[in-house]
Image (cartoon, rainbow, N blue to C red; front, side, top):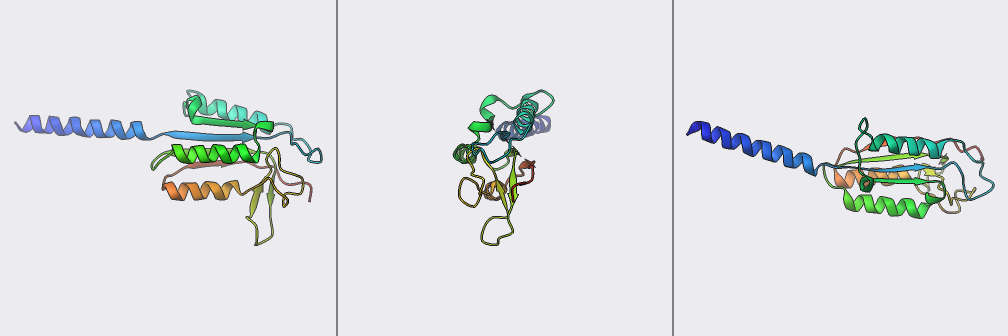
Length: 166
């Protein structure tokens, strides 16, 4: 009788463990911008390729084995501020407590010195040269907001080229 109880408890623990592992997911947003809509912003050589390579790694057997539906890849003209916000909103709806969120950005960034604006801004494809005008937001801040609301332990890979046009 005791062996049957131990066996049942063991099966129950295995069932809970396997089900909790099934519900833990990883989602990713990968952004790389080498070319910008504003002709005054100089092109970069490799950020879009860096993003494609990183996304490939996340999909691979050596990476996280992500499925296509778990990975948003936005490069160059597809990486507008609106598309990034839309992807973040979708990710926010799809992930839950215990899930992992990977966000990768490669392109231009800008560190502000003003206390009235977020400390770091990202240049998206449609961001104008004068970043204070429109088309940018604090991606890192949005990510921290999402992570704290979900109370999970996400991973952030954040790569930025400096802002050379000040």
